[in-house]
Length: 129
Image (cartoon, rainbow, N blue to C red; front, side, top):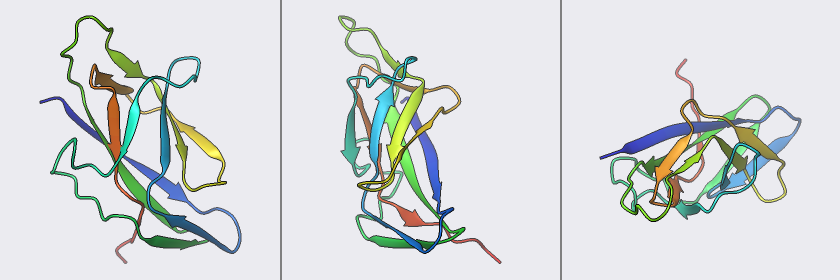
């Protein structure tokens, strides 16, 4: 079935509070860190029902607190007229106006010919004490 998933964590390292709402802006990048033709879906239902999306809601982080999103995709290759897409990097913008950060997941983001990835909304990370 080719289902892939990863977690992206944002930790507030600054002062004051940092507010997130909804979904991050994601871009699949090639080896030169240029954008690839991959569409980002808000919500995971079109890819899988196995990764629940909390939906857009406000998340406020104080210094040292974190929030996570799940990113899902399928490595499905059904169109032999186009080469499979494999993105070694993913650019993440946590919120409008926030700086972009690039992550390099082990194995990359191998979307095959599907041309899409999906993300959940931000969810505050709670640590068991």
